[in-house]
Image (cartoon, rainbow, N blue to C red; front, top):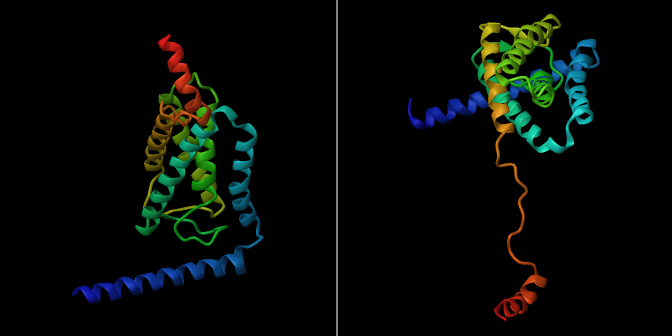
Length: 205
């Protein structure tokens, strides 16, 4: 295979991805839309974020969002790797994306992580992390599988437990970084520039 043949194969693969997306969209519009499973999936996207907006500590919103954003990015990347390698799938979808679960990965997991960080601050992360991993892997995923929002193929729940635990610890570390300081303009204001010479003269006296 030469370079041009490789380009042609990649182009053909991209066309198949587009066709797969269209197939998923057709199934959602013609089969899943407005079914009770679809409504549950939609609720799992919307309600956790509504709850977080209400319950969040407004003084720590930036820190919490940084932790939640990490969970979302890591989950999206991990989801893509898992689905592309046939480790798991999401049979019933709300949003026509073959490689992402907006209900679980981009809503439930980040919001749960942020609430875990915010509440019970005296409980050590070494306990919270495994607890977060256990809830996600041994409660959340089996429940989703029972209503066809998740399907485990060549995967095991304990693997998810260890990954989710590590994700929480990393998010907790990001939340506690000391670099969350307000950026302020250190340059003097116009009034300060005019007053600086007079202050210097007064000091000289």
